[in-house]
Amino acid sequence: MVIGGVIMFAGLLTITTCFYLWYGEPALLRRPRHLLLLLLLLLAFMLLAKWGLSPTVAQPYFLPLATLGMLVTVLLGVRLGLVAKR
Image (cartoon, rainbow, N blue to C red; front, top):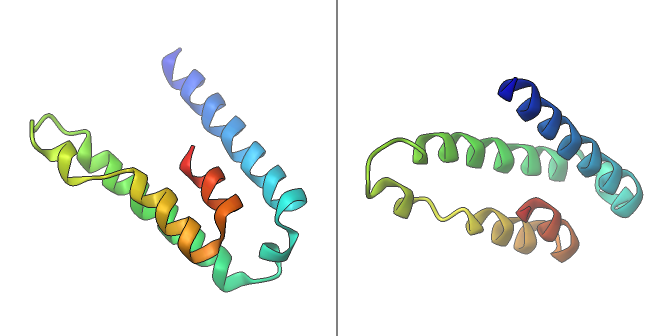
């Protein structure tokens, strides 16, 4: 039951992000290197977040999740950084 909710929530986030990229950032869709950069950043931070959720007490302090929003803002723009931050 919980896994179905997680999958639905992830699907909803994916759909809204794709919708924003299609209508809000159409120039980004014509730059495959920028899309690849965004994909690699998101995947890297998802893997780091998975590692950071382990039971070690000090481990979450080594993973500043706000860094993803900052990197996307600096590399790809403010509007896209706000979307990647959520």
